[in-house]
Image 1 (cartoon, helix red, strand yellow):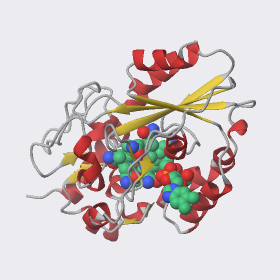
Image 2 (image 1 turned 135 degrees about the vertical axis):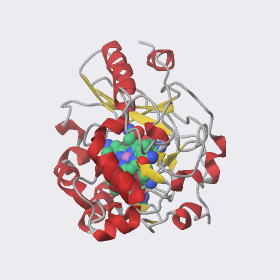
Image 3 (image 1 turned 90 degrees about the horizontal axis):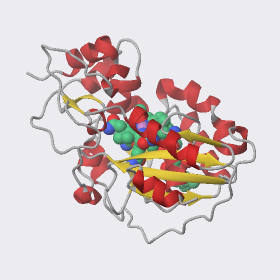
Length: 284
Ligand code: B12
């Protein structure tokens, strides 16, 4: 079984293997984050998954190893500076693209396996660090030496025991706080995000109407779906490598013509959500 060969054949850019244990300190961090209200309206589903996050055998009994893959998605730069769509959503939905590849990878591995890409109660960034893919920046993103933070993560849990990969030397943020300073709503403090103020949360995950405070935060922003401000200013992202592997085509939104392309992550907000974001955020 040549897992590494199959992973690169499938088009993933990064991979590593970690043991499945999660230290208590990670869960304490996660619990504190939720108890401060930082998860906003995602609190319910995030908190519900705590037991599984702490113990992967609750997801896959007999789990022995965690395979972590990363895929570069950086699609280039925006043309303008208003009604922008975060880069992760310019092309085909990564849940589908990565999901198909992760399904194929799982079929290659003997024993039981389960795969995830943003789709389950797994601390994906924690396992990416443990498997040696990168480090967590002050913007809370996984930053890799090869592509900066412009990578999606995928996980395969397996009952097969695999040799963990060793971490290579990684950079760190040092004294830099460009992301913290660049966040237009002050949502970041070192390695913590307050989703109640995060433009990404407000424009993607927040359901229903904005309250006046939320509307005030979204108004006048560059981004109307997702947000990349804390990644754009990150010095580690000078390593961005442009790729069209996710078929990028929606760098910004046309306010007159709200056509959502097939397979686009924009479908998550639906037309109503996009219209809400546009009317709150539109700059003349
Ligand atoms: C909920 C969620 C969000 C929320 C909250 C984001 C957040 N920072 O937590 C919102 C809607 C805001 C969001 C936004 C985005 N998201 Co999101 N999101 C998730 C999701 C589903 C869960 C994250 C989570 O559990 N957060 C809770 C915090 C507490 O956990 P955490 O971020 O994993 O942090 C852990 C470590 O950092 C560690 N840690 C950090 N500091 C310290 C300090 C100490 C002392 C200790 C002990 C531990 C510790 O502890 C935490 C718990 O293990 C993950 C998928 C997944 N299942 O992991 C994707 C995920 C994090 N998102 C992703 C992406 C691409 C985005 C956006 C870039 C999209 C966009 N452009 O708009 C933005 C980025 C915003 C940002 N700065 O994080 C990618 C990130 C890839 C990467 N390179 O990091 C993920 C991994 C999905 C994927 N499979 O690719 N997201």
